Length: 445
Ligand SMILES: C=C(O[C@@H]1C=C(C(=O)O)C=C[C@H]1O)C(=O)O
Image 1 (cartoon, rainbow, N blue to C red):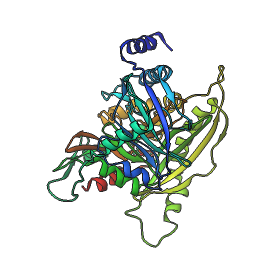
Image 2: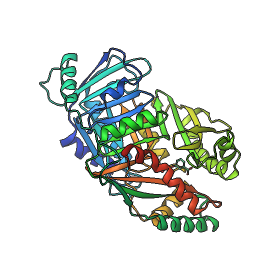
Image 3: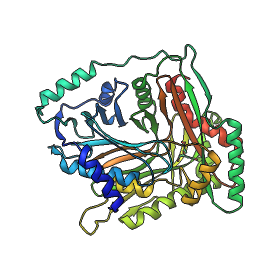
């Protein structure tokens, strides 16, 4: 740890690292959609896919950081918190025991504060078991299954109301980048690519959903989780969405990522052409090139940390309700470090972010150019979002296909597209709308 880091963490530790006590208790098996029955409160923390994942309630500890050291600071805080905690976890599976949910800013220069949040109650389900984790900071609370269930029951009494969709004065308005500005930025991006400064640039835009009545977050998340079942539905302190892209998932010494690049709108697809997606994505040179750049950037970074790696030769077509993507699942065995440990999910998040899929190639130069061309603070959009446990397991997706709740009646949606030399501004604009469709549908706007 650098001295600047240890000072910062030391300052935190002196006053702010609570001594947590935590107990995990196995519960009766839940049905496939059973986890969603717990997604009833707007202030829940959520990570869910295919009916597995966790829902968190309340907050017993929290860490905020910004700047280039945000990952390292959060990591050091988490290690210190885990070290000080008394954790009873008979299940010892990824996601059981003490966990924190996290959302990180895309850029080191963002004003968005990156955060880790430790919930008081977590309800979880994986392929083998269901559980509840109860975590407290107060020394006098009795940690028992009965106390955990009683607290959960009282939290679930606070059911958040649903919202009637498609009525009233809901509207979608321009964000910081209008449609015209976006096409201009894409045009400029293409000429920068033509000049040879970068080979790929990911340019994003925003739009704001202004609602006539307050957003019903739990309702939006339930809809995303059911409809976008192959995506990871997330909610961390106002950042919500369902992402198809896994930055990195760690279980023991195995790391996995799902890389996406190459997109095709399903709404404008010709009917009856069963090979359309195959032809337009797998057999298209521009899409394959864009995809390969994203794979190469991941495997280059993962290589030195791995003792073995499986990266498929050919991508597959991922079918989502709104779009098709070219996708590749990469898996690696993590190499042990000098002390015998393997990197934690936060170590890998720091190494991989930002990927070529959401920034460009080469990453550093692309990042500088996109900040200039977009001229907006991406906040947590396209940043890592997910969770970590005390053994270093965790999952961090890339915060795509989502938005930031800015007030009870306004949600800022973001979407971006990979630009290469052969891109067309109007097609990229249309693609950005296709990527906002899941949130628009869930919001009824
Ligand atoms: C940047 C986004 O998506 C990324 C860009 C893609 C592309 O350009 O084809 C595909 C998936 C994501 O990696 C977004 O959804 O906002």
